[in-house]
Structure formats: structure tokens, C-alpha cells
Image (cartoon, rainbow over all chains, first blue to last red):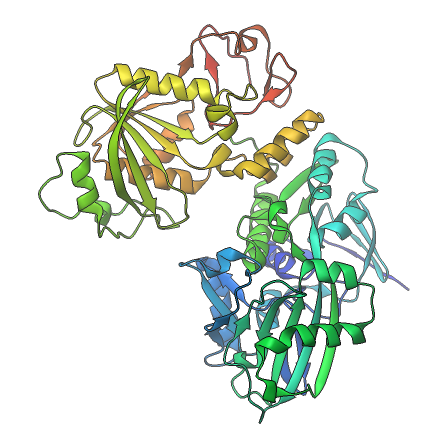
Length: 345
Length: 255
């Protein structure tokens, strides 16, 4: 039998935006339920384990200058182990453009966690009622219908990638605020990212850089992931394909992805590195928000009847990346807590 | 919030704007506001204009690559009750003469009035459309074109006052050595915001636009439901300067 539950706020998505929003609401005494289709938290701030070694196969590193996010990173790190939070990447190679040029601005700190970026999501989700493995299938004011449960709350917060959010919001009753919000979201572009993880024996020579931004070609970024780890058992590289290449090959054969992307990476790798001992591929269908799609603030729409709909995520704050996701979640929580939005003037 | 250390280091008291460049060469204070914004006077030159004799002051700030400026008339260093206008960059209005906003009228009025007074400053803040950026501003226009001008969409696009604007402005006022200002604005909240950052404000000067063929609709129509006036071409006017547009002779209805 499917579960049926009630709360004050349903937060759809246990990525950084959803967890940031949910943790702020919980701290303010709201009964929150976080619904997540995956089996773990973190969304694109994702970590896998290969032979016990963490590999960040989504976001490569966090960049921020925000004291609040830094405090959370430090707290997450402190709970995990000593020297857990590291400045990373320190050595950057290649003439290509970083995904977010601001990441390398003077006042930004670039950071990684030795245990993997999910350490942050786990810290933010501590004590939150999570309902994992719940894929949203339908949405009505005050209700989210998942494959494994039915959930009710006056306030709904959606942090799914924009195309998925749009799909869910389609069935809501028409009204002007919602209509213009949907128009904004429709104009946004979210790029896919085909990602390949390649591992190599630790006794081989490895690149001397942490992150490489190849210029042109199919690759957007190569992260030398094992350089984040205290005592890596293997060299791990994470190859992220460019938006264009990812789009063209999204429905293609994952075996071909590895071959093509490794060939593109070869000029940046020591040739003695040889063939990888392990290969894994991941298809991020909604990975990178196009820079021109960035909004400034989360959306909070009054659906009438005491029911509201909030939207947060990377797209809903200036800075981009994990910081934007974190901020938008916080901002939305603030606005949910103070009541209906008032005009600034 | 404004810390004492923002005050320039005691050296020979600066007498001219050029002295400020020298004074600020190594200026690096704790900054204003939670974002610890610090600015330096980076360059100064004469700027004779059709509105009077001005000097232009270029600022550097530690937060973003935006090069804010001050258009200064008369001797303002150490002066009290200096008339000050804050203007947010508006490419479409200021430069292109767009009729979708009143920015150019507001800017020209400020420059003209200050040019006629003994002294005054127009701070020209390079945050297009109140910080929303040109792309988002044009998106807001596109929504308007389709009749989708809503409070929430404009909010998401960034039409709001940013703490950063006031913190930067507060530091720039201090950097120019203004002892107190009279703010040219129709928005009392602006006065309160700047005071919060330690700017002594001794008065508010209403910024009333003279009526002309382009803003006559303010006198003839009422604001729509979302508080915007609809112009002759059917476009709603947003308050792009975070300053309510007031035209002489306008009756202000309830909002």
C-alpha cells in the first residue's frame, strides 16, 4: 500500500537547494518532508564510491565567498574528520573556459571535501525527514503524487531541474503569476553532461594538475578527482563532456562515450598513464544551467486557498553552482516564513 | 554597520578630488554591510557637459567588476547637505532613449538640477536596471509584451533593491568626503536604507519630472492593478530606478 503523509511543507528534491530550504524551514519549526526520487541525497553534488574511494561524478568542486555556506562546509567537514575541507583545485590546466568563470574570481574560495561532496548534503540533511525513492508523478495545489506515496502540505517547494519542474507544473490551474513564472522557466536552457569516470593503478604517473579545461573539442572539464583524497588507492579522472557533445551523444552508446572522451583527454594526460583499469559512465540529462538562464531570486506563487508553490535551485540566484542552489533554498525558506510576498516599493 | 575604519587614513586632508585618488591608492577597509564592500576613488577628470560643469569620478570596488561613477558639481569635499541623486544604469533608457521607462528623464533632471545648484553629486551605479542585468531586463520587457507583467516574475528577474547597492553608495558618499546629504528621491525607504549604512541624511528632495509628451500618461491615467502606469504604446512602466516616478501635477492614488 502506498504511504500517505501530511506536512506543513513538501520539498521536492534532496539536492543542495532542497536541503538548504528544508533545513532552514525545519529550524524555524515547520514540519517538512523532503521527497527525493534517488536513493541518496545531494542531487548533482554527487559522490560515488569506486573500490571504497569517493569520486565526485557531478559537481567537481564548490566555489563560494558566502560566509553561511562556508560555515556549513566547515561544520560538515568537522563532523567527518580532520582536514576534511580542502582548497581545491589548486593547479588548473588548459586554455578552455571554466563552466562558471566567476569560480576563479579573486574572492571566491574553491573547495572540495576529502570524503566527497555528498558530505555537505549529508550534513544539511541530518535530522530531516527524507522520503527517498519517491518519484513525483503529479502535482496539484497542496499535494504531490509520487510513485510510492501521496503527500499533502499547503506549501510545495520544487527544486527539480527546470525541465522536470515544468512538466510537473503543467497541470496546475491557470493564473497570471504562475503563467508568467512558467514563461520564465520555459525560456531557460539546461545542458546535459555526459560524464565518464576513468580509474588507473596508483603506481602509474598521473597528471600534475587538479582540473583541466580543454579548449574546444568534446570535453568541457577533466577533474583529477583522486587529488582530493588523502590516500587514494587509484588515480581517478572524471571527464565531463561539453554541452554540445553531450547533447549530440546523449542517446548514444555509453561504451562509445568512454572511447571518444578518453581520446579527447589523451593530449592532456601523461602517455605512461596507459589504459584505464576501470570505466564508468553517467548520463546527466540536466546538468548545467546555461549562464543566460540565471534568475535572481526564487519564485513563490500564491495558488489561492492558503496554498503556495515555491521554486528554488541553481537557476534562482545570481552566483551559479552549489552556492546559487544553497542561496535560493535559503531565500525561499525566508519568504515562506514571512508570509506572502510584499512589493518592495 | 559602517565601521570607523572606512574613514580615510589621516594624512593631509584632501582638498580636491584628485587628492582622493592619492589618498585611496592603498585604501582597504573592513568594508560596508554584510558583504564588506569597499570602494576606492580610482580616477578623476573634468567632465564639461550640456548640463553644466562637472567632474567625473571613477570608483573601483572589491565586489564585482562594475565601474561605478560619480558626476560631481562644485566643491563637495567636507560639504554639508549636499544634494545627491542615485541613478542605476539603464542602457535602454539613458542611452537609447527608450520610452519604456523614465530613466533618461530622471537622469537628465538630476544632472540639470545639480548643474544649476552650487554643488551636488549624481552617483551613476553600473547595475543595469537595478542590478537585474540587461538580459533579465529585456526578459522582463518580453513578458510585458505578452501581457505577463507580474510581481513575482519581476521579483525573480531581480527587480528589487539590493543591499549591495546601498552599501556601495554609502561608501562612495563617504569616499567623496560628503559630511551630509540631501537625497533626491521619491522613495523614503532609500533614505532609511542609506542611513542604515551610516550616511547622515539631512533631507529629501522630491524628484518631480516636468511633464512632457512622453510622460503625459502619468497625468492622464491611473496605475494598473500591479501599480504600474500604462504608457501610450500600451507598455507598463516599471520603477526601474527603485524610485517612484512622479510627474509635476500628478495626483498620487492609493497603491
